[in-house]
Length: 465
Ligand code: MLT
Ligand code: ZN
Image 1 (tube, rainbow, N blue to C red):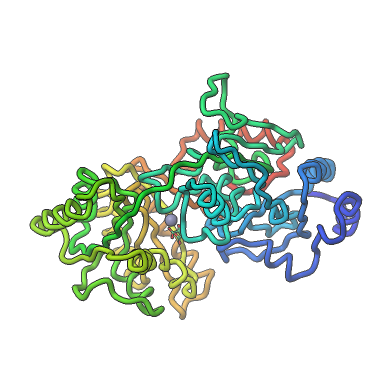
Image 2 (cartoon, rainbow, N blue to C red):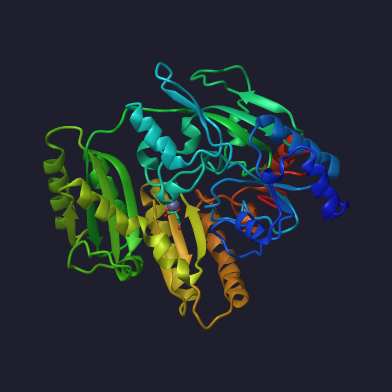
C-alpha cells in the first residue's frame, strides 16, 4: 500500500512511540505476524505496542497519512488468519493495554482495556463474587479485544450466548482515527442504530477496540458432566433434545471416536470401555436436589431408544475436569498434523440432516485423509479438522481441501448455514463469504467498511479481498 521506504515509515512511527514500543527484530515480526493458522508466511513491517488510546489514534492517523496497513493483534489464538500480517503491514499489538479499569457492583460490569486475557477477566469476576461466562479452550491466552473482534462463542453458548451478549459498552478508534464511545454500559438504549454491534465481530476491519465494558452475572451453581457413547450420528441431536427438555444444560458438545483417539494418545483416560463412533459431553446445572436423578432417568430413556450405548457422570469437580479435557484437548492433540479447519453452522433443527449430508460428502471426497469431527453441536456448530498426511506437501494438501470446500460450502448454502460459526472469516474463509452472504448483503458490508475506514488501512484482505 505505502510507497514510502520501510526505514522512512519506521522513522515516522518513532516520532510518537518509544523504542520499546516498536519491535522490528525478525523473531518479533514472526511471532506477532501470525495467529494459530500457519498457512501464510508472516512478513509485517514491524510490531507497535501502544499503551494509550492517544497512541492508537496517532498510529491510525499516521497509517492514513502514509497509506500504511494496520493489523490489530490480541492473543493471536485465531483460527482464520484475521491476525496474520503477511504483506508488510504494521502489527498493532494490544498486549500492553491490559488493565482492568473499573468494576461497578451495582451495574455488575467491568471496564477493561482490550489486552486483558479472557481467563484474567473470568478470575477477576469470580473475585467479585460474579461470573463472566464466555469460555473456550484458548481462555489462557486469548484477549478480550480479540474475543470482541471475532464475537467469540465457545463452549457455553447454549446457556449464555456469544461475546456480543455481554458487551455493554465499547470504545473504538475508527479507521479515520476518531474515538467512538458506544452504548456507554447501558442495558437499554433505543436511541437509533447501535454501532457497538457493528464493531463486534468485525475482525479489526472497521476500528480498533481500545476499551470494553462487559456485563457480569451470578455464578452458576454446581454442575455435573456426562460423557455418552453414541452409536449412530442421528442419536446426537435426539439425546440433546431429551436432555434439554428436562434439565438446564450449560454445554452440549460432540466429538468423534477419531478425535478421542488423539487425546487418548496424549495420555488421557477413556471415559468408559464401550467404544462408539461418536461421543457427546453434556454439562448440567444442578437446579434442584433431583437434578442428578433426572439426568440418570434421561440417560435410561436415551439408552432404551438405542441413542446411546454407554456413559459416565462426574462424581467430583476433578472428574468433571477430566471429562472436559477429552473435548477441550482435541485441538492441541491434532495440532502436529497441521489440520485444515472448517468451522461451520446450521440451525439446530437442521443439524441431523446436515450431518448426514456432510458425512456422506466427506467420506466420498476425503477417502484418504483423516477427518476429525468435534464441536458445539448444541448450538449447531461443527468443527471439521482435516489432518495433513505426512507424505503430502502443504500446498498440495491445501489445494485438495479448497476443492472440497466448494462442495462443503454449497451444501452449507443449501441448508442456510454459515461458512464460519465462530472462528471468523479472516484471510482463510474470505474467498467463501458468498456462500453465506448474498451479493446485496456483501455490497452493504463493503459500504460500511468504506464509511469507517475510507482508505482501507484496517486489516485489509480480511473478510473481503
Ligand atoms: C474449539 O472448539 O475447541 C475451538 O473452536 C478450536 C478448534 O476448533 O480447533
Ligand atoms: Zn469451537
